[in-house]
Structure formats: structure tokens, C-alpha cells
Length: 323
Ligand code: HEM
Ligand SMILES: *[C@@H]1O[C@H](CO)[C@@H](O)[C@H](O)[C@H]1NC(C)=O
Image 1 (tube, rainbow, N blue to C red):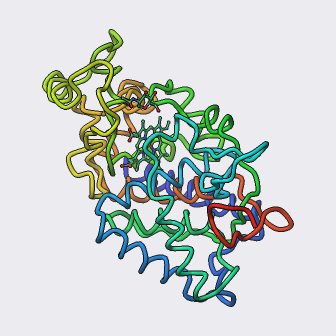
Image 2: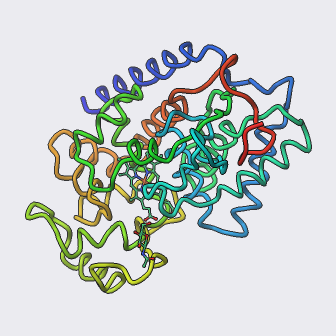
């Protein structure tokens, strides 16, 4: 019975997955076949090189995709460094605290420019780098449509208002992802990205020293986190803790730990305490392949948020500046 429900959910989400694409008719799975046939191979090679030098890079690339797509759309707005009216770097937003590897995207871009100048957009590079980061870390291999164009504007106020706070409510969280065409399952699955990477004390101390009465963080876990983040106002902005016990491996441990009261951020704990999302967390914790399948369709939808197609947008020559 359970198996049948899962199959139905999968079929429905696969159907939605193919349904989303025609809205962005100019994207396709073999977009660079003629203009840059080796584009995906180059991104994979560069990502591997970058990750061998810094094993925490895949986590940073995955978060970068979310923070790009969440503000205006998946348009590489987060990479713009230009300043002035209407072009205010999103990195000025406090919500982009600890965003990393923007310069590494520029390195991948240089490698692509050397092979096929002016063809591959920075928005597609962010999406491909995030996709490769998931599979390189042991997660699913995900096919994504390509052909996103780069935007010419950015605004740090927009980043402030669209990037979610770690203490967002479950309703706010669901709204964020359902508006991207995700199902309830997919919304929970995409947060499984928190199987990778770290959180800084700045984003955790609230839960450690000022917990809501309903906050059911595991007591031993809270004690351990307090040792790492010993003051209510962090003494520095460098100290961090792992998102889960295997921060370099893309697995379903995030969900296993949520059930044990060991989620790091408010939102992680909130979805484990909500009757709508808890059963889904249980399913993902029990069946990693099921998590991988739902994460894959959710990832494609995230990567298709408000994408630009000609005549809108451009292919930047340099990711940090408009042409
Ligand atoms: C409501 C939604 C979300 C909230 C509130 C949220 C919040 C956060 C916070 C506060 C951090 C810690 C940053 C730090 O202190 O260094 C973080 C890290 C991270 N987030 Fe999320 N997140 C959300 C959704 C997502 C999504 C959709 C993805 C990817 C698909 C994602 C991927 C990551 C990754 C990989 C990290 C680790 C980054 C690193 O190690 O540098 N998050 N998130
Ligand atoms: C850490 O970063 C936050 C947000 O950007 C800032 O408000 C705070 O002053 C910083 N703290 C330290 C100790 O640098």
C-alpha cells in the first residue's frame, strides 16, 4: 500500500516536472549541443578540481543555487559586484551571510570562455555546479534543462526581503517552495540539502540561549552546541558547526537527525514538529532512495525559478559584471 502511494507521488511529481519545462520553452536538456558540446564535462572537471582543494566547496555551491534562484530567479544576480542605483550587490544583504565560492564560479566561467566564448551563462554554471556538487557528494545524478540567461540588475533590498530567515515558520517555508511548483514532499526534500555543509553560531545562538517553549532540541545536542557557541552574542563570525554528522556526504542523515531532535536551525526543528511535514520526514529517514527521487524533481523545479530566456537577459562575459 505504502509502495503504491509512493509510486503515485513519484509519477505525479515527474509529470509536474515535465509540465514546468514548456513554460520556459527555450530551455532544453541539450541546449549547448552545438554551441558548447563539452560544457557539462568542463563544469564537472572544474568542480572536481575545486573540491579536491576544498572539500567544503560542494555545500557552498548548493546553497549558492538556492540564494541565486530565491532572489529574482535563477539569473546569476548573486554574482554581480557592480554598485550604483538599481545594481546593488546582493552580497550586502545580511541574509547572504557566509555565502561562499562566488569566485570559484568565475573560475569555472573562465574555463568555459576559453573553450566556447560567450556561450554559457553564469546562471547555467551555478545550476550545473550545484547539480555536480550533489552527485559528487554521493547524492543523485540530476538532469537539468539548460539555457538560462543572466540578468542585468540586482538589489540587496530584494535579497533582504526574499531570502528566508532561519526562524521562518512552516507556513512561510511551504509558501516559498509551493510557489515554485513544488509539492509538499518536494518542499521537505529540498530542505534535505542541509545534509551538506555548516551553520555559523550567529544563526544558532538564538535556539541555544533563547529557545521557544515548544523547541524540542535534544538536550545533549544543545549542550554540545553551547560548548561550540559559548556566548549568546557570538564572539566572532568564523565559528561554525556541521549541519549533520556527515557534512560532506549527501545522504538522508539530515532527516534521521531531525527525528532525534538534532536539527540545527529553527526551520529544521519546525518541520519535524509539524503534523503536515513530520510523516514525510519519517519516510525520507527510512528510505534514502525515495528521498533522492523526490529531491531530484524538487531540484529541477528550484533551478527553473523565474529563468530568463531571450530577448530577456544576456550571457555575461564575466560573472561579476554585466556586459
Ligand atoms: C526556508 C529555507 C531555508 C532556510 C531558512 C535556510 C537557512 C540556512 C542557514 C541559516 C544556513 C547557515 C548559514 C551559515 O551560518 O553559514 C544554511 C546553510 C545551508 N543551506 Fe540552507 N536554508 C534554507 C533552504 C535551503 C535550500 C533550498 C538549499 C539548497 C537547495 C539550502 C542549502 C544549504 C546548504 C548546502 C548550506 C550549507 C552551506 C555551507 O556549508 O556553506 N538551504 N541554510
Ligand atoms: C557578524 O555578522 C553580523 C551580520 O553580518 C553582524 O551584525 C555582526 O556585527 C558580526 N559580528 C562580529 C563579531 O563581527
